[in-house]
Length: 596
Ligand code: BDP
Image 1 (cartoon, helix red, strand yellow):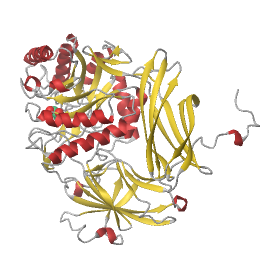
Image 2 (spheres, rainbow, N blue to C red):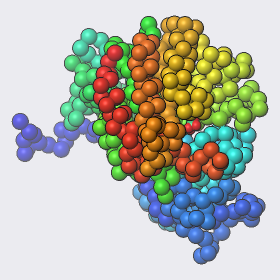
Image 3 (tube, protein in one colour):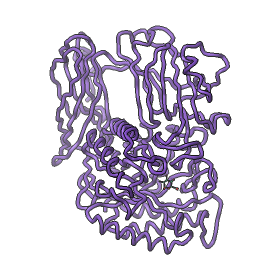
Image 4 (spheres, rainbow, N blue to C red):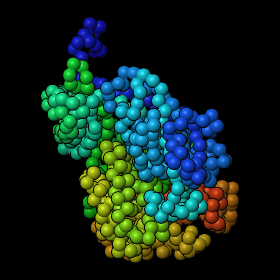
């Protein structure tokens, strides 16, 4: 029975939910490239907006919005005005960026707010002291996408990247202002476990008091299944002036519905802290109740061994560059589901929140990869303290963002590093320490192309390998490729018998419309045949627990003699039209069960 008409508002608890203020800054911004780097010296952030600045859409890289910017690498300025609501006065306000490639420096009303390096992880700056509430405000963002041997990923030019994807520049993910009261929840972390039929949810809520005085608070933790509260805890606590404290509690969800690919059931945790007359803050995080473990050479999801079938992907689409909109993502996930995929790797950087939201909702098993690709020719010294600091920080930022997602089952800390060198071990140790410190629950790995020469395989929980027999070596010879793949896998397994193996990359370029009988490299037939050949070997090895085809769709790259404007290893074209191999992949994936 629903609520009766006579239900009294007074019966609703005050602390139920407090809304945060959010102001989305998507839209057309003023834009000017600054190839001579005059802007900072000439203090462009102090000026009135000159009428001759161009317009650019945020969020989206600048490259494909106008051909004048396609190959631009350097500094560019963004600016716009926005109104700061009058009732935000007295609150905390952060200016948040979900992703800016690669460096950003930010000013609001001539105040310098700060800078950030790294294109694929979020950052924010406190802005309340710079803002004028109830008035218009002006923000300037200076973005620099210059590649060097010390950027991550590294490179020396748009066509001299140490990674194989196009180096887009600009504000490519959402930007917004967020306001909270002065006593707020800074973080809510949760870990889940299974106890018989019940779900165990361990929650750490971090409460920060910037009100200037001691506050008596009420903390409410609620877990929702749809609209229904299925577990809850309330308690009184005192928050000291200028304090930050973490409250850890365990909630039990009776008869829990476990999150898994065939039923990705999501719960919602709401953490509320109420204080004073009627003030407070609430945050919500979706989660799934599931466990992930690596045991006896298997990856266990909720105790059951799983087999990962899917793709290495990229965020790439014409004009939008790295900004995959909701409609494109929906299309991609629909295609992946049709093919029978249950998994993908965020090769080679953390994807957008929206991207991973759909993975949570559709039940994909995601290997979250860090932007640490190309750490070989690009970086002369793997033990350079500057590199170590950046690797650690980017790893921390990524793990912090995605630690509550059920879809993320593993962290890949590098793609194809110089792991045949002894020095790589020290760098891997740093990255692994950072990942485990921020999240001890998920297995870690990296994608190796050094195979039997690799010196760091003992340090990972799961072995991941990229193979290109039949493409970069043993060209055109799928029989030899099959034999070599099989032998190499067996030797790797012999060396590391306790660790499960995933083949994280294998594939061949196919130019849509090129056909050859018998199959030849670059033809659609050859791509389909290579995929089938690899899949046969992968499935014949008990210790191999997954295979990811490289790549889901063709993607843009820099100019080089080895690429015809795109990397064509997609089974779909860049605009998601199927190549011949799609039919084959559907056959192979749908006949491969998720549980092995
Ligand atoms: C692998 C890289 C990937 C490339 C792929 C290729 O991990 O980024 O796109 O080769 O050459 O080595 O297609």
